[in-house]
Image 1 (cartoon, rainbow, N blue to C red):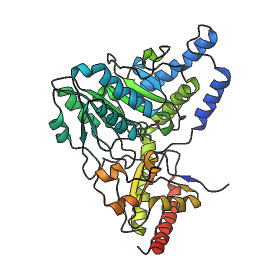
Image 2: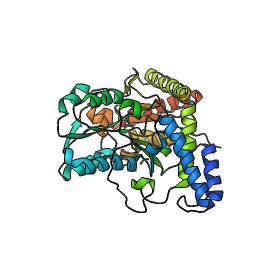
Image 3: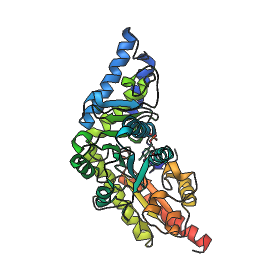
Image 4: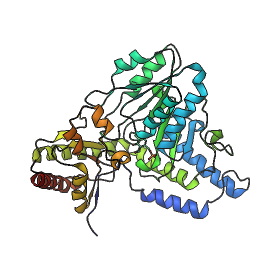
Length: 387
Ligand SMILES: Cc1ncc(COP(=O)(O)O)c(C=O)c1O
């Protein structure tokens, strides 16, 4: 078999074999509708309940606070639109940052068209927001703050715990939503402890199936649902439950959380080694990810000025190496990354930026072939273009 090195785990991950086995078994044997009153329905409902309990345990919240959605995008949409439409009588101002995933930024654009006032927090050169700016922009009209925990393009870690503290101490209730799609399974994520009211997680980023996600909603929080129907998921998300997806997600969460710290250590070693070896070979590259506690263990973004990321990506592909140019969501649009723009990179640095992203299924032995391939590709491309 041809060699395959998959360093694109922030785009998506390979389904864990135990997850796939359990989903297969569920599809074949436990195919009832959880709403049916007979035994097959009860069995399916028990499988969903079991997964809900595993997930609630991992987040240290109660199972009644866990809702299943079709993924991170739907969780983000449900959380943000659900809150602003349920609580708009309390205020018109909502806050996010300018480095969010499109499933947050585009929702905010839409809400602006509907008349909401928006503040986009800026980030510093390390991709992290400034807490002082947040404190300055909070006002009596603010009803929601929505921030990502880990940035999907560069891995910058936002101080969500600190934000939760600030909002807890504020004189009026401001809801706090966290997009934890890139952090859950890699970093500790404890919404209840951190003063987070709503939190999004996606199955396919943690070796679970695609098309399934989690929304944590703190007890007592009202949400205007996006999808109306038969009232499943306590009417927050109608539609017959994706039982195999939910069961698979439960298994993926169990595996991800059990050895989370050991996995993070392994990914961080891969990240550090790859960064330092590439820097040795291509001295003028620019590392766009943090190594000071403000960087996630699984994401490394590097710029190679004088190259084009899409071309490098296809060079590497010929060597069986899979990576990304920026985020998968924006990679096909051909415009410069809004995250790297917000971090004030030069145009040339943005054009030649690559994202390597790791999982616990990767190994340190995979690093050197990638270093060799990247070095060769950068040199060849620069020779071709005379840069
Ligand atoms: C930070 C972040 N939020 C949300 C999403 C969307 O998740 P999904 O693909 O499950 O819709 C992604 C996916 O790349 C992401 O990286």
